[in-house]
Image 1 (cartoon, protein in one colour):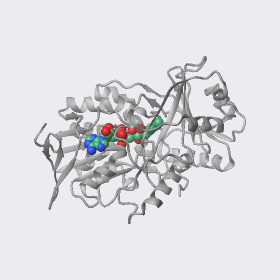
Image 2 (cartoon, rainbow, N blue to C red):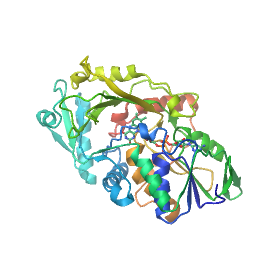
Image 3 (cartoon, rainbow, N blue to C red):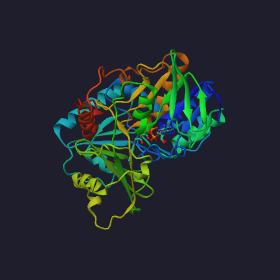
Image 4 (cartoon, rainbow, N blue to C red):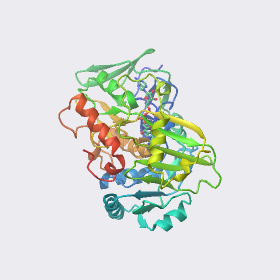
Amino acid sequence: MIASADVVVVGSGAFGASAAYHLAQRGVRVAVLERAALASQTSPRAAGLTSQIRATPALTRLAQRAVTKLAAFGAETGQPLRFTQSGALKIARTDRDAEQLTREVTRGAEVGVPISLVSIAEARRLLPILGVRGIVAVTWSPTDCNVEPSELPLGYCRAAEKLGAVLLPHTAATGFEIGPRGVEGVRTPGGTIATRVVVDAAGAWARLVAAALGASSLPVVPTRHQLLITEPIAGVGPHFPIARVIDANVYVRHERGGLMLGGYEPDPLQPEALPDDVRALPLDVDVLWRLAHSVREQFPIFQDPSIRVAEHRGGLPTMTMDDRYLVGPLPGVTGAWVMSGCCVGGLSVSPALGEAIAEWIVDGAPALDCSDISPTRFGAPVDEARLRERCRHAYATHYRASGGEPSG
Ligand SMILES: Cc1cc2nc3c(=O)[nH]c(=O)nc-3n(C[C@H](O)[C@H](O)[C@H](O)COP(=O)(O)OP(=O)(O)OC[C@H]3O[C@@H](n4cnc5c(N)ncnc54)[C@H](O)[C@@H]3O)c2cc1C
């Protein structure tokens, strides 16, 4: 146990690990408290997809910056990361979603993210398993990519450690010392670490940590998200792009010679009582088969009775009411910061968000505009039932919300 640190990061998932690395890179004395094994909770269970066109130019710039950093991860950190720049197809099956795609092409051009409308024949050339029935329009984003999710936070942890950060796995933050000038220390079972700055990057448990810090509320809702990976299928390979079907909220990509399928059901589980470990989260593969059925014309391969599931996994990302991250100073507690509201897109953008929070803490402001993800943007707290309903809606309409459509 250490006696003091400039910054204590609570949580070693994608958010906390990236924050710790970027703070250590700036010469800050960082300690990372992780109550489980390092990077063992929601982050390694992600699909690892990027999606750069976001609802606002500022969010798109953050996602674009993250892809640049993912591509250079090995060179920057010296740590391994399986990175595949497969590109991504986005599929509209309705005229309304085709209009969304047209707007996304315009928004990409404004920020400099390559994206164009392509013919259905071209989409099928890129993704030979694609069934063309029911498709109205498709975009192609050649710079989107996917990574091995477990390697990213672990790589940032190891790289942070090499820069002097102290990693404390199996050590929970159990409470906080708050004085008249704000944060003074973090309590752990092994003693108190004196510090003036805490970053709450506790994933599904971020609300508990924020409450222990004395924040009035953190408007995020942990929400179960799942995916499956099939056994290898002949002809399927890493050259396959990511594919997303907007109205069905389904994504498909290559993984280990098979296909990964995940998606956003209309009525996701929002557990009232959080498990201590995501391995205790009940999973339900039927949710995924229903989503597969909803895209049977575009992905008939999932209706093949010989398909076998090699892996089914899930975790607890946190949703916000507007489907945007919640990152910045924690309102009402001097010295406390939060990285939450990942909205099932935190792994891929964590390189940019960790960089931004380090700049914010060290320089007083991030280089990229983070006002769209400010923790203060919702104003007065909403009651729990309304919060849950609005987060459910944001989840259930994720591909429209992230495309800039109002998510309710
Ligand atoms: C099936 C699935 C698919 C996904 N697909 C994608 C995708 O394609 N692209 C993408 O970008 N994102 C995706 N995500 C979302 C992504 O996984 C999350 O955005 C990301 O992992 C969030 O990281 P985190 O650091 O907030 O959470 P976590 O990884 O859960 O880390 C939080 C950590 O805090 C620790 N902690 C909690 N309380 C305490 C405490 N009191 N003291 C010490 N430590 C504590 C926990 O043990 C945990 O390790 C997906 C998620 C799932 C489940």
